[in-house]
Length: 342
Ligand code: AHN
Ligand code: ZN
Image (tube, rainbow, N blue to C red; front, side, top):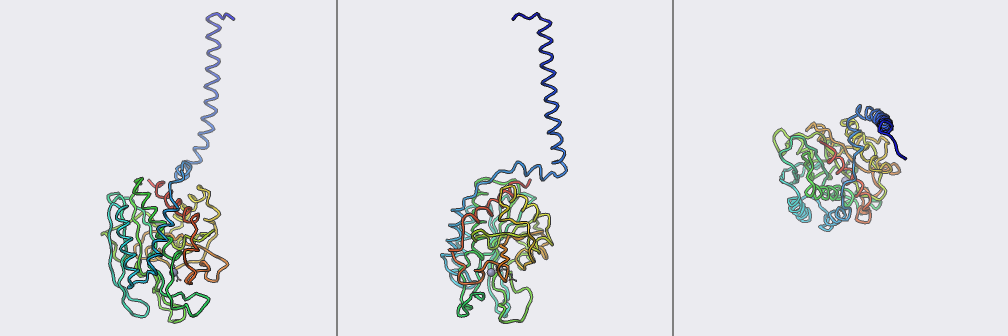
């Protein structure tokens, strides 16, 4: 078919009108959605969230390695050797490492030496995120069903080593892909030598001696962080993490930020939207004394009398209770939070 010049121009013009009309419709739809997102700048960011690299085999190895030192009771040789290994390993991942040595009084008035191990990434960044876990283990399995075990130390594979193991793998990933924000990872010592129920003196503040010391003696003058995340008992198979009371009291926005990111990654079966009772843990003192809003990702087990894992402070808290999938999910959530923070 032969078309004259004018007709050609007319057809071209109609095609152009059609194209620009459909572009207009498309952009106005997109614009509407954008408006919704703009109300919440954070939401718009999270939509682009990718699953960050986190190697659960590596995290599992870091947990196992700690347990292999033996029970990490402050003042014992395994505790010292494990601490030395944590320092030499984290030195390889971090830009800077500070060991904060301190002495603290136990509930029975005994004095104990401890070390808070602080790994620093992007030391010059003004905006920072604080991550924490405790690396000591409880000297008493005082919740063991067998009373003969009540004075024996625990492996603390979940209670202690799991949080540290996840954060070691987080550190390794940060050394591979540098975040925009600064990150400080603190391994608190002497968290778990709190007064046993049996002595019944109801002394206050007998737990979390390392975090109490750090919160009142920051490792750098005027240290501050935007927010903090504590990991405690993050290794059990099918663990549920609820919005814990101390966290929602001091840092409700951070709880929601972290749980939203967990949901974006598809982990809402673990990061449940239930509210759980308040816990005394390292994050409480960081909130109270250092005034940094810090939350606790800690297993919530409603079928247990203590609301903790059934193995809590028993001889059963060993490597058999560590699950790679749980380590994986917690690690990915922490990394996603870090890389999503500008
Ligand atoms: C109390 O039992 C008061 N706090 C528990 C904190 C803890 C111990 N986390 C691990 N072990
Ligand atoms: Zn404990």
